[in-house]
Image 1 (cartoon, rainbow, N blue to C red):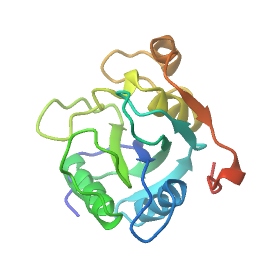
Image 2: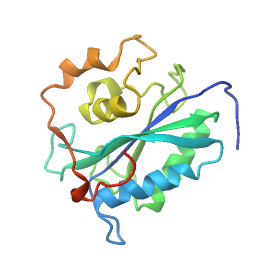
Image 3: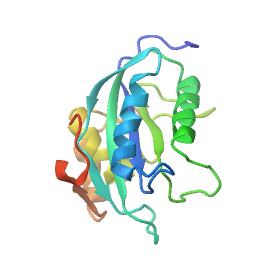
Image 4: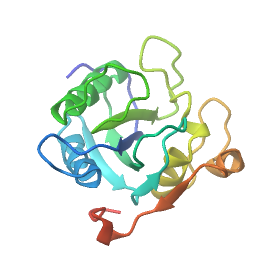
Length: 181
């Protein structure tokens, strides 16, 4: 496992899905499966999982709604290596990267890694659209209420008015979103 950055203590991964897997698991079941796969990444450990949310696609489209959450992880790994691990998990879930913003059985994004600011190469950190997405901000607040954007220094509450019009709701455990919350 390559390592090039030291002292990264908190890594936040957005988890989302809006299609069932080929094996039949619902989007919610796939998200729970993904948490287990994230826990297997060497050098990182899961320290928190948000509640699960159902949200409309952004940008709006005719796609089914998404199931979204955020996983808080601790450890010290290279961002590019971590992105490769996330892509491998997505591929194992049946994701094929063919069209931007297409419906998918799994989407994993690095939201932030400690206070790291990185503009190139991939991944760009913090995620450039994280603060404009309710489906990231609300679950992120569940696992790290005092998270601050490393670029602006602003906390989650500063960004919430900008996402107030986005459709999102917290899911109940009976909807298949049970698991760590």
